[in-house]
Length: 357
Image (cartoon, rainbow, N blue to C red; front, side):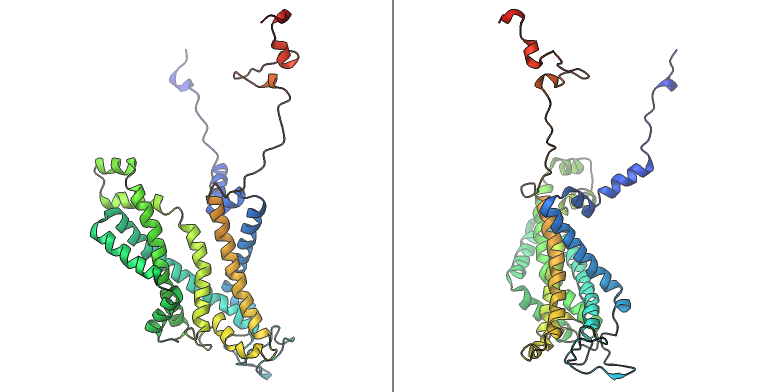
């Protein structure tokens, strides 16, 4: 006689399989497996350029032959505007600094500004958009007007004004990084605010939010557990694009003379500014390599952002080609579980005997 203990018990999924599935569902890994053709090539190229940028910034002291502000070694002064040679692979600047070392150390400054600017703008923009879209009323109207005014203001001019107000135009390494990051943060906040607010206004009218209110959930719980998770799904795409914009804004501030002192840190825009006079004299190496670093870094972040945007939009996503396999005959298509139409001769075998209709 069968007992309750004789019932079949489903076996648990092995831990390695669960880990493998969770690893494949990671944001960038999932999009990489989903992409094909040109989209995959763009995404892989962007990821490689971004990885080179990050690794160079982390291991800059090990990769750079000299310090970013070093002017001499055991043999004496480097000399200004020295052409590329064995001692200086990319030559020296007009100030006597090693071009390769300053280009490598410039990645650390750019990465620090990106991290600080994105974290600050993401945190402030998401919180303001969440509160504004959820509660509405006069607070929503005031925040919308303020953010629209900031968004309509020229971003570079606003960053210059903020840089002057914060650091007086020039400062030390961390002072310049914070000044540039805060300047970029002010520009980025309206973007996150507008996106999050629009999603919150849509989500708060959904039935699951009304159900949470009915069972007595408070505003903090609804906003944190139900609204916020669904309102921030598109933010990774905006973050990648804003990273490239942050590098361009930082380079523009340094090029215009509102960046970091050369003795405090390396910055690509400042080096480009000092190399303007060299270009007309045929000294090309002082401008080419910092400019190439800006272009390649911005290209890497832009390719990643555009690829993720295409993959998130079903209208732009490239689909995999289906296998070129067709059933051998319509008569072999299964119509019941475990069965198939297998009459001899295909469909002709199903005709009535004697040709009767």
